[in-house]
Length: 270
Image: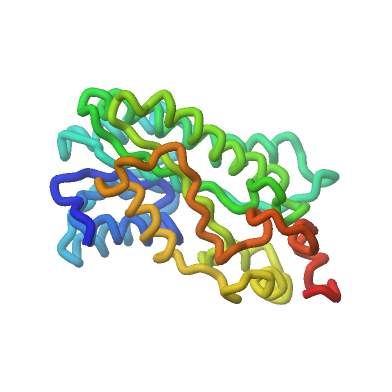
């Protein structure tokens, strides 16, 4: 068990999926958790934490709005007096080919997935610097890797690749202040996101390319995030921890993994 007693964690996009699992696990490990999201399910997550004996503060947060991010930090300080952990998980996962993608489509993904990470990080920096302590974990994606794994996710891949670059560079700035920043790089995780945009056979084809032969569980991502947010991970910063079942998109292999999902289920190599 990792010890988060007396610590306070803000988790964005905590209404479901990886964010929900992370908020629940941090609370189980003793942290007071600020559950933030734009969706109403954040209230249910906060209630579940309290019912399990944990401490939760629930706030609506649109991560594209810097002033909202600042307000959440202020509310956190009013309630708990400190902020030790920030998990930048909020994001969207749309699909669109370049021909059909509009500038507005592109900007929305960049604003939420990448700028939102910056906004929330910027908002917690004053308190973490005053404390001379902080743990920031950013959620990227295998789609943002050097090979990538689908041709209909260029805006998403750009945003998540940007998260990795931001993590590496910002970690250098933050290290002298006692703040670490790392990224988690998930592969295909069973959050329901893939099912909303892809056919079952497309998902099956992608899963079959991984040695473990399945999607990851949100709880498995939560465990990795929680470790990077813990004191035992104090000597890890600027890192990108790949949690993808050895997804081909990040391991450097070529082949069907770099083609659009819609083509995978028709490939004789799957």
